[in-house]
Structure formats: C-alpha cells, structure tokens
Amino acid sequence: MFRLAATSCTSRGFNPARTLIVCGERAVFHSKLTAFHSQLSQGYLVDDHEVTVIMSFYIPVLLLMTAAMTLHSVHSSNAIRHDWTRADILALFNMPFNDLLFRAQQVHRDHFDPNQVQVSTLLSIKTGACPEDCKYCPQSGHYNTGLEKEKLLEVEKVIEEARAAKANGSTRFCMGAAWRSPAEKDMPYVLHMVREVKALGMETCMTLGMLDGDKSARLAEAGLDYYNHNLDTSPEYYGEIITTRTYAERLETLENVRSAGMKVCSGGIVGMGETQNDRAGLLQQLSNLNPHPDSVPINNLVKVEGTPLENEAELDPFDFLRTIAVARILMPKSYVRLSAGRETMNDQMQALAFMAGANSVFYGDKLLTTPNPAAHQDQQLFARLGINQTGINPKDNSIHTPNKEPQFYNACA
Ligand code: SAM
Ligand code: DTB
Ligand code: SF4
Image 1 (spheres, rainbow, N blue to C red):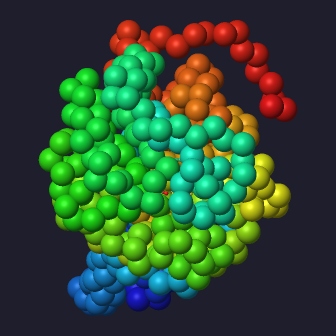
Image 2 (image 1 turned 180 degrees about the horizontal axis):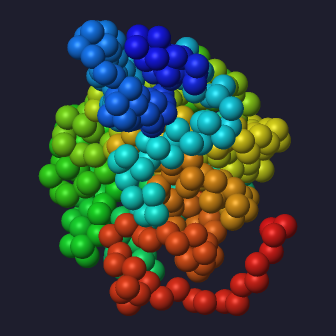
C-alpha cells in the first residue's frame, strides 16, 4: 500500500518540497491530493495494516501541505512585506515576462478589482524657475527649456480648474508647484486652495517640494488627503540626477507627511539612463517604507528639450512594464500609477501596464507642463478594455461626458 501511495505521488511528478518554494502550485498540489483521496475512497485499502501505513504517509503529507500553504501565504502574493532585499527584487525583475505578469495579476486580483482605475487630474499652480537642479525637469531654473514661468495661480482659477476636472470625471485633484519647499508667505493661499477643492467633494493632493512637520500638519488640517513626493530613483543613482536635495531629505518629507496623517504618494522615474539594479533599488526603498506609500507613481521620462536628459535613450517598453509589475508585487495594496509618459505609449502598451497591476492614471490633456492623452481618448481606451473609473458608477455617465470625437481602431498607433 505504501508503494501504491508513493507511486501515486511520485510517478506523476509530485514533489512535496517543491510546494514549499514554488508559488502558484497550490492547485497542482490539491489535485494530486484529491486523486490520492479518491484512491483511498475507491477501496484500494482493504485492511488495518494498510490503513496504518497509509495514514503514516497521509498525516505527514497533510502537515506538509499546511506548512506549504503557510509559507506560500507568507512569501507570496498576499503577504505585505517591508523587508524586500535587492536580490529578492532582482529575482522578480528577471522572471520570464509572462510569469512576472501572471504573478503581478494574481497579487493585483487579491487586493483590487482588476477592472477599476482611479484617475486624478493635475494642475501646475506655480510653474517654472525652480531652484532645484533635477536633470529631468522642464521646470528647473538651471536649464533653458523655453517654459514660460508663472507665479502662484489665484485661488479662483484653481477652483475653476478643479470644477472642470470633476465635471470631466476626475475624483482627485492634484496641485503641483515648482518649489524646493513652500515658502511661509505662500502657505495661506495653498491652504485656501485645499479647503476650496475639498469643498467641491474631490480628494485633494499636492506636490510642493519638501515639507517640515509644521507645514505638513497645517496642510493635513486644511483637508489635504495625499501628498506626492517622489524618491525618483535608487539611492546610488540619485546623485547623477539631483544635487540640490538629498535622498535623506526626501525620506524625511515622507515621514513628516505620514506623521501628519496624510496619505503618501511616492514613486519615481524610469528611463533616465539608470540600470535595472537602480529600478530595483527605487522599488526596494519604496517597498521597505512601513506602511507602503498609498500611491506609487511610475513615471516614464518625458524627454524635454533643454534638459540634460533630452537625448536619453528610450527604455525598453518591457522594462517599463516589468517595473510596474514588480511594484505591484512588492506593494500589493498600493495604487500603482501609470504616470508621466503615457502620451508616447500606444493603447496596447497601456493595456499591458494595467495587466501588470497599474490601477491609476493622471487624466486630462496636460500633466504639469507636458502633454498627456486627452480625456476622451482615455474614456475610449477604458471602454474598449471594460475598465471603470474608481468612484464613478459606470451606469451613471452624467459626471463625465467628454467630447466624443470619432476614433478608428489603428493597430499601428
Ligand atoms: N517640485 C516638487 C518636487 O519635486 O517635489 C513637485 C513637482 S515635481 C514636477 C513632481 C515629480 O514629477 C517629480 O518628482 C518627478 O518624479 C516628476 N517629473 C518631473 N519632470 C518629469 C519628466 N520630465 N518626466 C517624468 N517625470 C517627471
Ligand atoms: C508624479 O509622479 N508625476 C506627476 C505628479 N507626480 C506631480 C508629474 C509629472 C510631470 C511630468 C513633467 C511635466 O509635465 O512637467
Ligand atoms: Fe523643481 Fe520639482 Fe522640477 Fe525638481 S522636479 S526641478 S524640485 S519642480
């Protein structure tokens, strides 16, 4: 009988140890065990001795299965970890593409409706002449990008834009300023903007540069829901991109934002000439924050003439998608935002990004200073993919009625 049991388990390739280390094998394990079970119930066992022998095999197998399940849940899709090593993350990056996407999808489906995407609208409330030297940024005063600089917008203008964003189907309004950090003289205006946008019933988000504890607390008090402050890249590559603010200062701002009770939005940019190890390093920093950022924007560099990165080589699109998928696996409950760079991505690429676990986008024809796909294009893409916008009842289209220009399917676009 032992031979029967052993044969039924090994001749079909069942190796209990494998279940301890390979994720996604639960179903295979179950089916082997079910087959084994049915052999038991079909009367292969006839005497007490055989029952004793089989039970001495069956019980350890059950124990092994329980251990495998526990390990599986601790080390796979469902577990929220803050101890990811660089090697763990590189191993994910190096998985075969289809396996990586499959795993990211599993994690995504464990935590989110895979057919829902959250959309936020961006507005630059203060444009250009920034004292920082971020090499990717069209708003840095260190480079000549031909951008027309603007003073802080009037509160009325900001409210008007927020109303339009809401009417166009956006549920979150994100206001960005080209500052190193907000000056005290600007705080009353900024706080006023938060209160007014909040009063429209929208979620509020700002990105104003570095924040200390006091300014964080005042913004939170005014009703700011999210604060965006990106780590941008790995700690090792960071010095190649920005010299006027340190990585530690960025982490400190995130800490202040979290302590004030706001939700953290933090991610980075890829396609800046970094290596895969740098992309892993960025995601390692983000995923080892405890708690994880609520929102993780992954920007593909928008190459702007006049910036030092204007001629940077294009990142392989699959490496971009891998970054999204790995972010999804490392931070299962965070919104992963397919951010800057969508303007140059075709619909298929964006669909793959959603498949890899992205579940939010910036919406509206402008990011801060550079173009983004028009709202009606996004609406059409969502409709073709059966995607609903978070916070909007799909049957109620009264909230978003974007212009419907005729669109023809273009497989090459
Ligand atoms: N000045 C504030 C700061 O840097 O914290 C807020 C605004 S800044 C423009 C917000 C983020 O936009 C940056 O951290 C960066 O990740 C992203 N960004 C800026 N220029 C970009 C570009 N050309 N391509 C992609 N992302 C970009
Ligand atoms: C983020 O990570 N990306 C957005 C938002 N946070 C503020 C900004 C992208 C800016 C792209 C360049 C521009 O439009 O100026
Ligand atoms: Fe200034 Fe922000 Fe642009 Fe850096 S990314 S130059 S801080 S606006």
